[in-house]
Image (cartoon, rainbow, N blue to C red; front, side, top):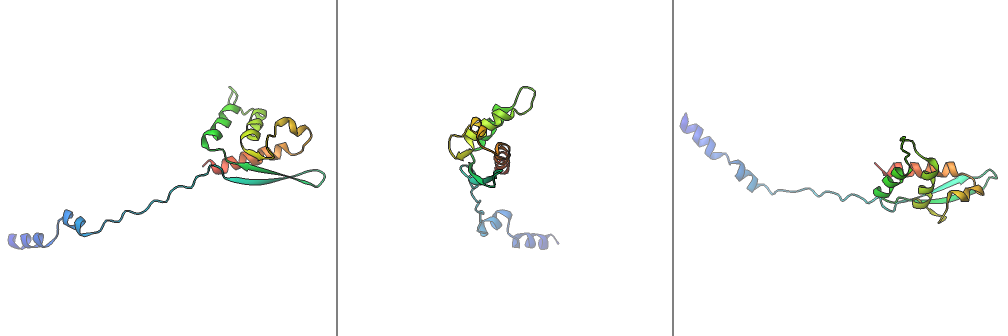
Length: 125
């Protein structure tokens, strides 16, 4: 009986031998796609029926976090005017150089800020 066990064990390759016999295939890992610079066009309808177009661009995770950090008041609430200024400066790239003051003569600031906020949220996952 002991001789049969030894013969069976001798016939079976060791784990090291099994590994050597198999060609080890390391699967390729897909490179993550960079979100930096991704863009989205947003259309804001005006009261006169016209449409204003804005181009949003993702500023990267660091800048997105800084926008939130810079806009948060000590009580934890978001300062909407600072948040809007930050989004207009770092996310809305066309038309260029918009400021919150430009919306004294333009419509749709709330819709634009909400769209830019949603855009950042989609990419910040």
